[in-house]
Amino acid sequence: MNLEKIYSELLSNIGFSANEIQQNWTDLEKAYSKKSRHYHNLTHLKEMIESFEKYSNRLQNPNEILFSIFYHDFVYSASKKDNELKSAEYGLAILPQNVNLNKQLVFDAICATQQHQHNKIEDINWLIDFDLKILAKDWDDYKIYFEQIRKEYSIYPDLLYKPGRAKALKHFLENEFIFQTEEFRNLHEEKARQNIEKEISILT
Image 1 (spheres, one colour):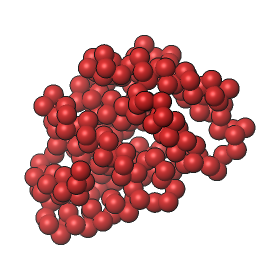
Image 2 (cartoon, helix red, strand yellow):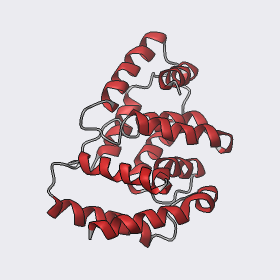
Image 3 (cartoon, one colour):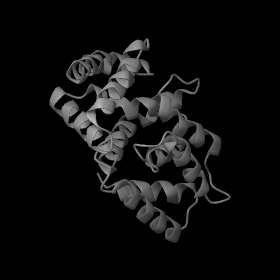
Image 4 (cartoon, rainbow, N blue to C red):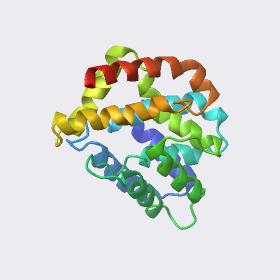
C-alpha cells in the first residue's frame, strides 16, 4: 500500500495545492515515525486504511473519514490525556479556507477515537471499528500489539501500568459491544473479547 499516494490523492481532491500536500505529508510522516511510536505509527494507519478501502462504499462521507484516519493519532503522547483533541485541532488547523470537507464531522470523528463509544453518526462508528480491529487479530499478532503498547508506556513501571491497562481492557468487556457496527460485531466481537480476557489474565 502506498500511503503517500492515498494521502496525496485525498488532499488534492479536497482542495490542497501540490506544495501544501508535500509539506503536510512530510509533517505527517515525521509525526507517525517518532521513535516512541511502537504501535501508533504508519503501520497502524495502513491497517486502518485497509479496512477503510474494504468498507468505503458503506460510508456517507468517505473523504472525511479517510482524513480522520490520517490525523486521529497525529498528536500522541502516552503521558497525556488530550491526544485526540489535540489531533483533531491540528487536523482542522491545516485545512485550506475553502476546503471541500465537513470540518465538524472530522473534528467529532477524531475525538470519538478516544472513548470508542457508540455514535449517532454511523460514519464515526465505522472509524471507531477500523481503529479497534487490532483487538480481533490472531493471538500472535494481538500479543505483538499489546507488547508495542507496553513499550509506548515504558515510562510507567509495571506496578502502575498493569492495573491501568487491565482497567482499560475491562472497560471494553463491560460494554454491551466492543464494536459499533453490526458488520464488525458479527465478524470480530467474539475474538476481540477472547483476546482481551487472555491479556487481562496475563496482567493480573
